[in-house]
Length: 56
Image (cartoon, rainbow, N blue to C red; front, side, top):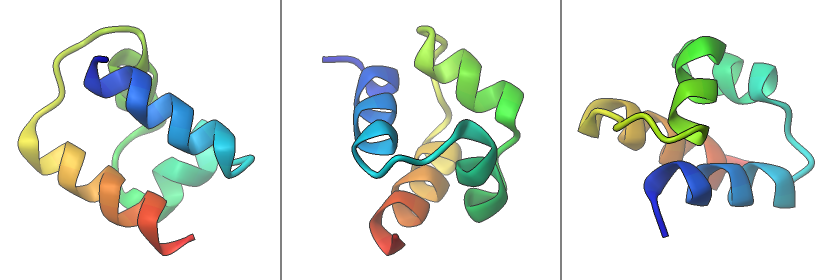
């Protein structure tokens, strides 16, 4: 499973929109969308997303 698939899976499991995840993580909604569609994320962005998804 790719990183973007995991982000989308965890985000959807929490009924969280990309916009909300963006607000909580500091990663732009455009970047989150790109990651979920297969773009390679940076380690920094993955860290921010993981922290935001964990804290909900």
